[in-house]
Image (cartoon, rainbow, N blue to C red; front, side, top):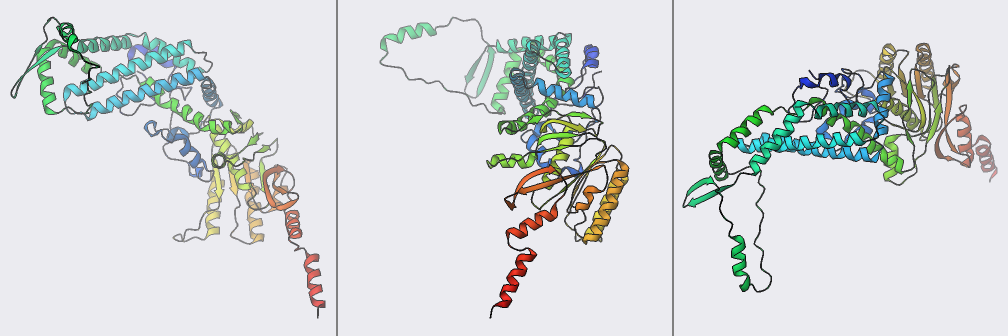
Length: 536
């Protein structure tokens, strides 16, 4: 039996035994290994801290019918699975293939609309007609996609496997019978001709016998009386969704007049009520993961920003160049504001990035970017930046400041300590931790003491970590720590550049420069006080 890893909303499916062999080679455009699809339904807790909730909402906007969120909530643990998705993304950069997939998706949406209409309709024969339309559209969509893939220049295992599957499926007895019977039934129904005889409130329906057409003779007779262009009296019938009782009664009489044709139609609908191949149904849904993601990333490429497919491995030597926060960049592009990019690089034994610098200088944005890249990289998506090398993690944790909950019996500091303890208990050497200005609710000495203890545990666990802090001392805590600083304009320290660069912390220098700009250094203030004291 075929393994079903997804389905289109409201579409019936059936197992097709003749496709067993092909099914073993291709199951999913998202998952290389059959049976590896175990999608998570609930969103990870850290998404909002990293602004990934905004990113994912933007990606899946307008795609509710496909239920794509579980795909974005399910990180992969196999680099081969991630590369499998990267190759599919690269194939979709081919404009011809992109158009083919979009056309297939549109036809499948039409099919689902017909199925939904069939479910809602009341009269039996009208329901059957909607099902016939759905099957016609399905056969056309599959045939067109198969032909397009046959002629496409494909490289990914995903699309090559799909092509092989479709070629075998469309040549199988199941599909050939479906397509042939559909065409036969549609042709039979289209050839039905009947006459309606109305006398008062009585209606009689009978087969239309072969009779001569006097239309040409009538037109020729009245041609001599024509004066000017004739008025057109053609009109369209309203395409109401549901027949009324009179139309239904007439249709019942038509069925009685053509019993053989409608008996065949009845057998057809019973046989093919579950016509939809589950692998094709899964593809219809899963390929939208790639389509929606690629559509979202176009805005950044159009703005001149770099998007890449990262190299993902279990090495903790990570890097990224020209990286940026996707959620922030999307807003800045809409506002026609410039997007500032940054770089990062860690080489053994470096594990911890300590980010310091002035407030509102881009520190938190940098930490979010690091987390966004590693998360999106883990689900096989393109990431913001160029030539990125990312770590394949088992769990990702964030420790961001929370609003104090007045209903809680614990204070803000205690809540922070409880959360960080849970993280450190659950984390492994393959985890990533993003911390953002922890322990701000306590004194400087206590914050330094607590932060050092946490960092010592992070070092012991060998975690990959980014911590945003006002404590410069953490940058030199170990050979595994690296200092990065958000910079300011050298001519005007009050202006942030939003550039985060690798260099020793210089918080005191920022403070001194700002004090000098506003004439608030010790010597300047002392001079003004002394001069004021000398005045009579």
